[in-house]
Amino acid sequence: MVKPDLDAARKLTLTPMETKSVTRNVTLTPLGSLEELTQALRCLPGVGPKAAQRMALHLLQHDRDGAQRLSRALEAAMQAIRHCERCNTFTEGELCALCRSSKRDPALLCVVETPADLFMIEHTQAYGGLYFVLMGRLSPLDGIGPKEIRLDRLLKRALDGVVREVVLATNFTNEGEATAHYVGEMLAARGLTVTRLARGVPVGGELEYVDSGTLAQALRERRALSG
Image (cartoon, rainbow, N blue to C red; front, side):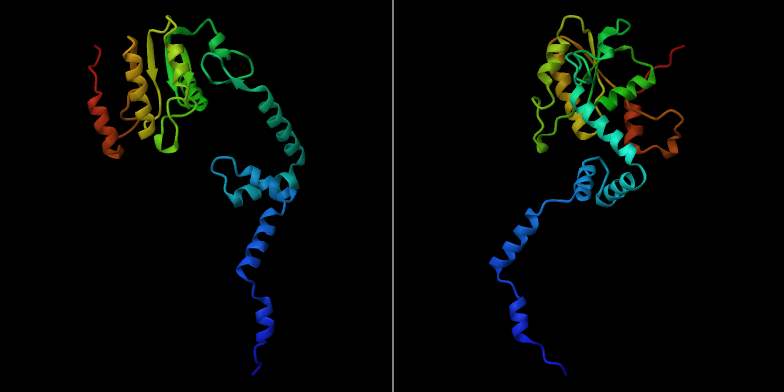
């Protein structure tokens, strides 16, 4: 039987101070270009370490021209895109195309959480007013209050003397509902008509497959049939 070399084992054992020194040196080692690219791609929503690595390797191995194009587009967007002075969405000028349009109804103001929500409502082609984008929703646990979602700007926009109705189109999450309630009370107290997006059974939906919460809300928000 081979006896273990205790002296060699003692030499390989690190003291706590030595362990901290090694950890600190590893931490301070700069990332290589591939690792830096992988870490950068992880900022995208839903992209974990493996997906980010696959994206990085694909760009480097199969589509370097696409990677260069992506780099240029990101740099140009970061330099050119800003917030619209009136509705707070993304634009390259002081006012976005919707705010400049003379075809929109200025008496209607729809409040949404994100530019993506604005695009979704526009795709319905059922709304012809203007917008205000909060760029978020109230979430005290995350440190997001009225100041962070620019409710002061919304208040100034809604009280311009032209807006007659504010449509609250925040999401139907706990935070979205809290935001709608807060904004609704704030605007209603100043004499504005405030409405909320209706909820209910989706178009083409069958009651058997609708969840009880949605069905209950649909019953509460039922309306008379127009003959």
